[in-house]
Image (tube, rainbow, N blue to C red; front, side, top):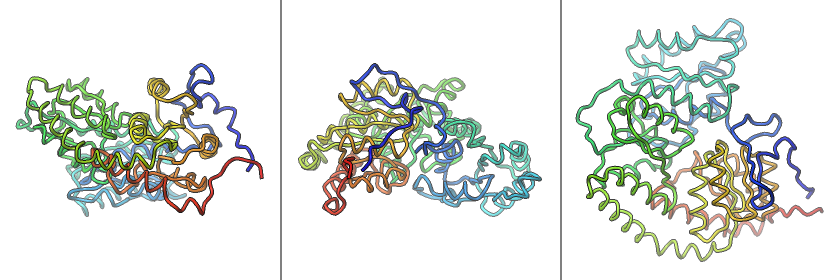
Length: 452
């Protein structure tokens, strides 16, 4: 197998700890031709808003954009499932020439009459930005006629990175917040931001906080409801899980409504426990909340600890490569893998900022490769060189792992089991063990990088 080279223009976004001074470049557009694993602006906004289950989601653009992002989160709902239907205005050549505003108007009107949603989100795609459709005015007109919020999401794909899509989604969400009052919401209440209910994770996290005596006003956006989001400004605290996607919204809510926010992670024993303790500290005037949090942590860890120790024996000394969307998730995964006795030889993200990568550098061992906005060739190169036994990523990294002849763990949108919370840590450990120790790898020899 011939040696794999990286693109010269990408070198500033790759760093191997211990080899040279740290100077990581990030938050820039993907390099043309590098086949980046990062999604576009539209996709970034879609994955944030998609789990709102009683809203209509209409993609204004070619049908391919809607098909690409259909059911992309795998987000579960405890009630309505309107979000799982993927609607598109299906713009074609004629619409590009003459404009698609009429098509959008009639599509919106018909869909609202048919499905009676609580609100509607209209996503602008690249072609809409090019031809100049006034999506905002169409949304305003339909909202007045139908009596529900119709919110434009300015997510033209060429406008930036996936992170810009997060901001577009937050801006649309922010227009809903504050539209509904609920005086029954008391002091001990919070919103969960950046939790998307993959495999039912939001239900697990909500249960922990409710056991502590805290009311959950809204989850944005897993198993989300429009009316809950509209009254979210009444909560006393915002707890931000996926920091890359929702910190922007938390900052806007702090500026307008004075709601403080804390960043947490629900992955791994240490970070899950901190997520409960940090909330309890915020409501420090009620010591019973902290006592309940301690009881939850003690009971949950005691219930899974023996099984984790058994799994650790079969994973001790194995090597893992981590490449995920947000750097905050990478932090938790490094801790969780170390708890299982594994070494992290590659760590990267699609949307990390300079502070994230500085912290990642401090967490990683000597020789670990840190990468921003990687492409398949780069991931393959370092998996081979570092002799990783496992890749943790999303659906786009799965083929890389299998072609390399090593294990894979899906820690992104498409998985069907919860990996958050204490039971999620056990699920994660079991999945990693099954994948790394599977006998199938005897029939798919790993790539070594040696010339043949």
